[in-house]
Length: 171
Image 1 (cartoon, rainbow, N blue to C red):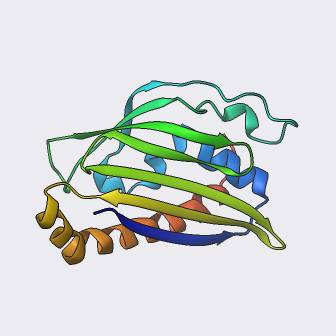
Image 2 (cartoon, helix red, strand yellow; image 1 turned 90 degrees about the vertical axis):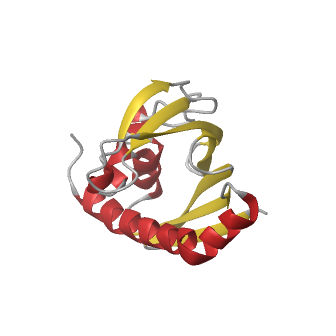
């Protein structure tokens, strides 16, 4: 049975800045805890169609609908084993959001949609995740015992890290 997780963040930056940050695949490993040593090992990027207007950072966005990214992570600190996570980008919409869907990885099903909207003080980011752990009833038990809490901790980390990284000047 699929589960749902939603995290929201108010980010004090313009929607163009926030969108360019999240739509740039190079930022994905930077948003993950350092002990995971996340890295993009392979990628096939399909550039999105040009935006109606250029904005700062839009030239850094390479991963439109159909892009495929293989990320590997350490499952636990100091692990010599790396686990692959292969995802494809779906529903890319300029200055609105996009979704990534797991093709191969730790979940039976995973779809993560990033939706952004402008606010009077910056941008609202909503991360909506639909997921299903493997192993049927055991996976549901694991969700109750730790997966949901791990998602809460992971997105809390991502929120803190997002603010840190956006405060840095573009390289």
